[in-house]
Length: 237
Image 1 (cartoon, rainbow, N blue to C red):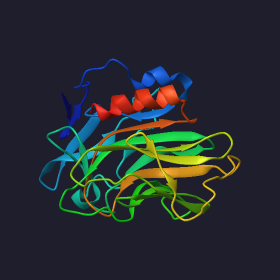
Image 2: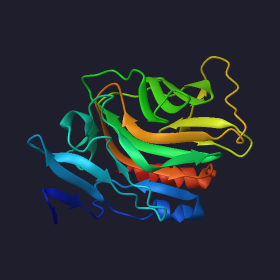
Image 3: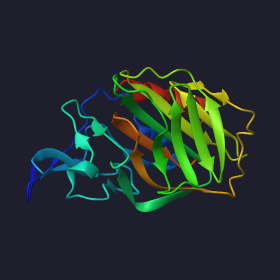
Image 4: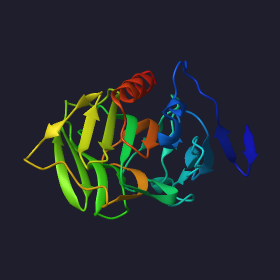
């Protein structure tokens, strides 16, 4: 459907739905759905430059690139419905910064098979105080004031996977790769009191090329049942 001025929007789910993140109820904060509500425009001869990925949750915190006139700073919509980020110049910025005590943030994503995961920011505060990151194919990092390192099951570049970051009400932080919880990489406590909130300003600033399929953000940690259902849902994308 054309929106005029060279813009277009893709909407509507393109995969079977038996369960969706709406089942998470009031925990669901922001939801960036696969191949849904993605607005694109022609920028420097690229007609798939993403200008906005609209939030499908009630809060409607849409994300958009820092620049909508420079191709090098804009992710691209791919023919398979994913959004491709090609460098640390690519980002999608929240229309309103996100501040959370407890949380569960999950990504369905894939790294390019020709590249190696290395210091890949998934979300950050547009600075260095807070971030969710993949440091290598077997290590994830969470920084909320102080940095906490996790050993996770190996990510194979070129294959889709699900990675999730959670913090419970007692401050415990966990990272799940394909629904398997990680462990402390270097003796960190993996705990930050929820009174110290995490502030997130943007997503999609990886060092290497990655394709993003869906992002689900919650304002609380998940129960085992919720986590299993969310993983099964994301893994089907």
